[in-house]
Image (cartoon, rainbow, N blue to C red; front, side, top):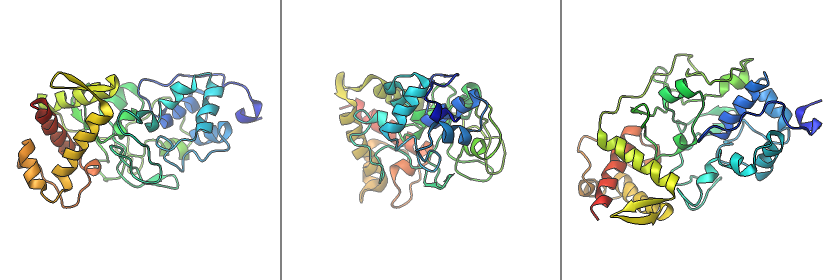
Length: 287
């Protein structure tokens, strides 16, 4: 009898780790039961297309409630594993049919991810063995723990990161994600070392604002949604506005940061996004 049909809680129920994605947690649940992750999800969640959708982004309440029942974990804790948990703090509205502000898209096609929307810190992946939710935000550009840039693709074959494909298509059921490219099997190369204290402080400020629910601007508390809306306007102006060069000069961006015409901020490489956000934070500190 399948786990879904038995109606009982799972025998082993590891809790989601801090800031863990839903897909990462389900992979660890499957590993805890010695099952292929696809077999596990088909057994526990037979009514849902789990791996052919961007589940971290678009998750039905019924799926979250089912996971809550079989793991005996409050549905509110399960919901915190999804990008929807940022609604009201990072963005106002979650859009499943089109791009959501600050969210990097992965371009799901069947079980493949065709766009480099998933970022990771290789150091964190090797040390902690799970994927963090904040890595899907374009507001994230480096890891303040390991002081290195986040990566979005394999340095050897340039394929987008598909950390779970190996666990879906093989008999592997390791409890810890392996820091390898699932296309060419090379070990993932760590992002460039970050020596700039300004960039590290900018990332720390962004993460603190998300965690606290407010940002400090000139000593005043500002709701994070309002704050990030303002940051967004300046970021878009620096990248794609008609007078983008003028805006970049106004916020103090370095001349050697290269932008291409009609680029979208969320799709910029980590270093470029970091420089833009760092300049904007410096600007707002002087308001």
